[in-house]
Length: 221
Image (tube, rainbow, N blue to C red; front, side):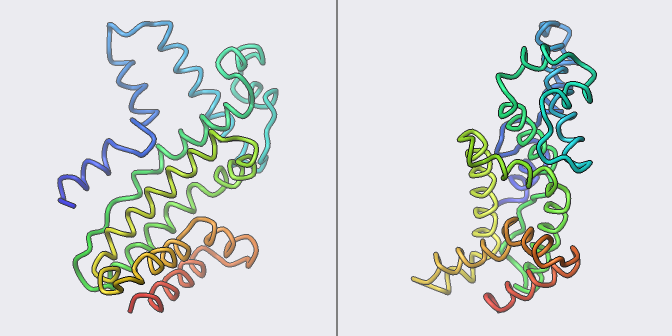
């Protein structure tokens, strides 16, 4: 992938469409944009952000009433913009993903593999530390929501594609075993593995990054 393409990925593209904040800002700068639609977009963002704030403060399943109170709006207005709490969670998941997706910059397949491993581990640590509180809450609701499952599937697919680019030489050398090797790399660098290190094994972010690096080194070097 060219540096120009990588730069475009980093700045103005996410797998979830244009960034929520950047889209709203563009509409705010447009004097011809419908004022009622703009107010609605602002309110939706405000409600989604209220939900994100509550989750990050330790409430993994905030109710619509709590979200409304935090947003400073009526419960009726919340349900004017969202069909149900699941829809708020879906919106929050997309907002959170869009805001943090810029951390995922394509790491080229050139250079020593140990340096690429280090870059991947550093990038995944930065991403996962940022998204984990909301991601845990979203995952807990995924079984109840096909829309949330779709959001998570898009994120997983993009992260897997990035790994396939970064470790293309090693995957090619593996021949017929390449797909299985990619599966193993994906597992080692997944948010689920990271969260298991952090919550079940009670490891620090630094220790969890070391485990990820050790596993990738064993697989690739």
